[in-house]
Image (tube, rainbow, N blue to C red; front, side, top):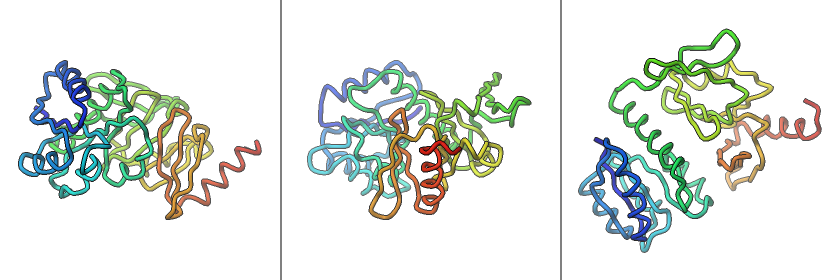
Length: 249
């Protein structure tokens, strides 16, 4: 049973999350909080596995609540927001996903499934596993008794998820039981580029690059997804984007 807390100052927003969770038998809402200080005190006294966190709340913000919790006590978090300008701070707090308001039902289920997978990894339960590469270059993902074949050309970006790699394909994500650095060796370097020690992107998906104060950058993909790029990889990234922009690739 996944223990859940809902942090949002809007009663209707809390009710919306609660109603969606009622369709899932493996979750239990233990607490709801309407302000940041109350949430911080409550989560310190009664930790949960997963929290749906409104980014802006009275007093302490949702992000401040997460930052003030010791890492060992900090739950997995799915952020709720009407905008996505908090993305950099969310990366630092290891939020696993964010949902833009009004919440899309399909995205809600996807975010909850992602939390399930990560909690299973923490508990030592084997997740879906990658079985390597199919003969035609596709990546094999084992899901229970089924095998799904993923064409690399359909992957938008890839992130490290502990010792695993998470493939983002449109609205879906697949957990591959293979480290990111090893998967990178199998992918076409003309198609995919490492932009962070924990992230790779399909170059054709990059729509925007926003420089940050510490010489890192925030990439915006064509589907709106933010991906952080480290200054370590910035020179190669900019060179690739220039070549792609001039049509020399």
